[in-house]
Length: 103
Ligand SMILES: [Ca+2]
Image (tube, rainbow, N blue to C red; front, side, top):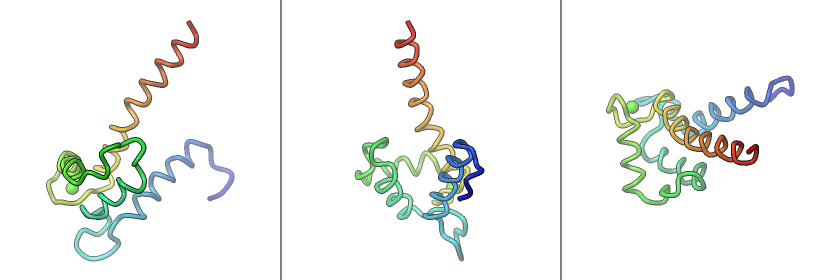
């Protein structure tokens, strides 16, 4: 990754690269993450922020909720919804902490 990129640009690239790492790159479901790969991604990449990642039922429910077009696979847009869902409460928490430390 080139050094000219900003921190935000690098963060976006990390998110894209993480998706690419788990997506299927050929055949049926190309450019999407299968259920089993998605479960693996939750366990390996999000085990601190999503505490139920080891729980198969919880993971399946999350997949069901994210799978907006019900094709049994997670597209990039559906993955992005997950990232937003994780980030939003963290953003609120950071804002609260900043307000507490400034008052
Ligand atoms: Ca889908």
